[in-house]
Image 1 (tube, rainbow, N blue to C red):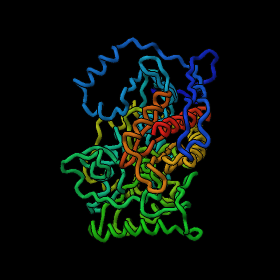
Image 2: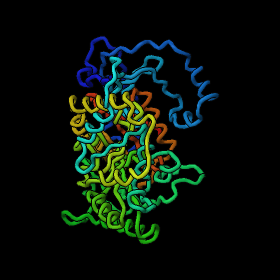
Image 3: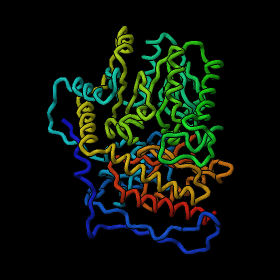
Image 4: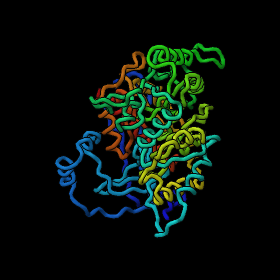
Length: 497
């Protein structure tokens, strides 16, 4: 059996004598009139950690890069954002070490995959009968009725592929609607659901998939300062009456327009992430999913919540992202954090939809294997034991609140948003235009943050959003360290500009 160790009991603690890195504010004239009212002071020490990584004794960095160039999938080089790639050797909780022994605070977690911290599973070599059944019952207990039938897969793309098939068989309809800017996988079928040119190829894919306008209250045509369920709102003015969001009405109007012009009168499904992940932590008006689900069901479709990045307590206020929208979908897909890095995914649906799917024979050779189920069960245990959902809420809310102060300080930070530890910081040329910060500028800041010891992500249709989705075991001390580094990196860029 595999068991994940308790994340908080293994917390990186203060240790005297631990090597640390300190960075100081560079001197120089302050040229930006608003950005530098309060320039960052000395950067604090990196929080200490009592875990000692093994010394790296493998092949040289030069040889690794040579093999990457000659023998590996070339996409590996494309998605390595840094000019000088970080070659990770070992991880523990929220910390990563490269082959040179340098430590980094991990605030991206393999795109929200390492849910409870980097932990090697422990094995006692045993196996258990009916482990898939036991795990499926355990997983289903975390979902509301009638979501009680579990299909185990190996990835999120597989899960979404399966959900597409089940929706079409159950409804007898074919067309599926998704939101622009979404990411739902890279298989030939799910590529049709994905609405971001960076993940598209010039081949036929996703027949029957149609996109509708994303209700983005910062970058979209409508939105205001009371629209979304987030500790931080946009700075756009809002003239809505109490309890009534005009922006939501407009975006739902766009969905109605899609129904009227782009799909048949009956559809199979609507896919939606409760908060867009790759899209850059995009949040919708508070009632958007509730109103959208009603329209979809009137058109004969089922509603599918893609919880690959938002699930398992990451949003803090709820275990599942859809719960924050006060809806119950007909299917929920999940992966990434479900196995804390182990290749695993799932679809959970209703008995009615499962019955329609049972008309044919379906199996998944490796989905639900005993090792995967044991790992998944351990992850649920750690989430419960260590209170990682509460950590997501407390640390995430603090991070967003403090990041909003930096938004008010710097002209190039346009928006801060998210829930729990799914956070996006949208970068702009200036707040008035909301034009996106160019890729080269994003890369400069990104590289600077890495060089000061922190790894974060990027996202958005135009690559204009910094993404913070760390393992759900980080501390307030880690958050303060990141905030100081981020402040310093933005300050550095503004001085150069």
